[in-house]
Image (cartoon, rainbow, N blue to C red; front, side, top):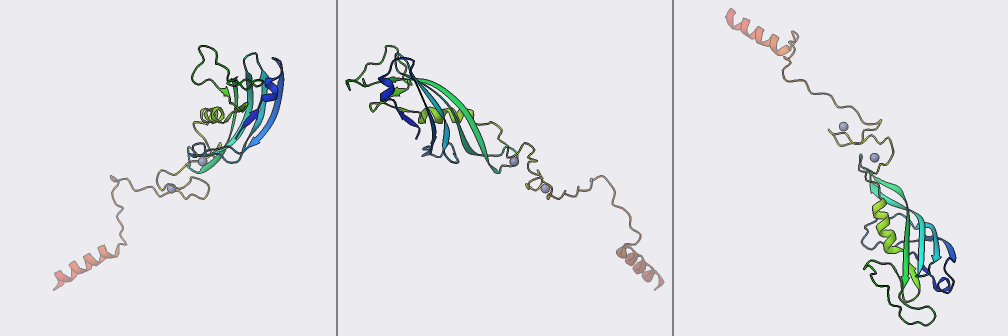
Length: 190
Ligand SMILES: [Zn+2]
Ligand SMILES: [Zn+2]
């Protein structure tokens, strides 16, 4: 849960800056992000004439499937976000503040407790920063197309099947061939 109470900052003049380091467990109720451990980063909050501008660098560790060998691999995701949050409650009077005309539906807001919540913005930011081709290692050898095992040093190469058009080698020592000749000779001598 990454959130900041900005009631003090809202009492300051525009241009006032507050900085925080954060390291927080992050809610992921639908297990969509597959986070491993908390999210950490630094937030820089700037009082604007309208509200609070939040800038944050963050990093998170996410469990993904290696694109080559399909093993679970933990990938570090680094991202940054910039959002201006507008108040819905006046911090001095406690009265509701009308949003400026033309405010978008997805405009980030400072809630009635004068808190900025970065959770939803961080969640979307992490999703857009996930690597498209995560690898467990840069030189991951991938899987054998024949047996499905990992193509590492312990994988034994498979014998190549004989090409069909090659004739079977004639073996003069074939005991069954010799037996056939002996039986044939026997029949003739009788
Ligand atoms: Zn891999
Ligand atoms: Zn194999």
